[in-house]
Image 1 (cartoon, rainbow, N blue to C red):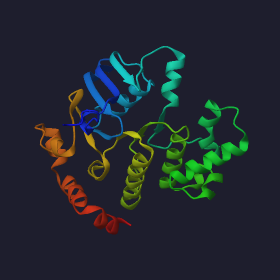
Image 2 (tube, rainbow, N blue to C red):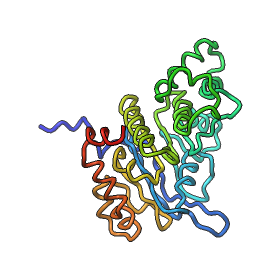
Image 3 (cartoon, one colour):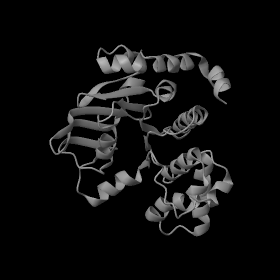
Length: 277
């Protein structure tokens, strides 16, 4: 007898549901009836041409922008709710790494990581705050001495990791990454990809990842959501996306850069690692 008590991977409950999303800026329509679901425990890559509203979609899901129409549910909570407790609950249970890291320039890395901890756990003693910040910094792949450095004293890749440490401060089940490998060299970008996959597997994270990086899409994403024509055209594993009949999709996923990314993926972890480390 088949065991029906366990969900197959494609039957996992969505942790994010977006239905009929409409976003406009004046007369410019960015989204028009956009639907999207993100399943618990997956890394979903969100891709699309310039102006397709990838970051606008992320901000709408996070409640940072109120859409013109549509429904958004995050972690079982209405993201459009005016209830202060519900909005704060979404904030507490989501971590966000913006493209530039968005670190406070006048605070050390450790102090940056402590900001959400102090906001949501104001009674924690300083000694525990320090230890928690140190733990998150190490989780993000930074050395302990980075804790006392200012953002300006870090390389671009280290600032990304410091921003990731802060995003992980409250142990959120849901992580948003906006162009996490932008500006990184190929070695740094590949290392960051491996870090995200390792953290996702170790911590059971769900990851919403906006990227233009084909290597990232091929290397770590479970599904790809393609934005075009004001909607999500397709939201599926890479092999299905590659077969989707749309001019932008075919050009993007069958061009020379896509072929190189596919070859790197097909080379296997050992060869990829030897080629980039």
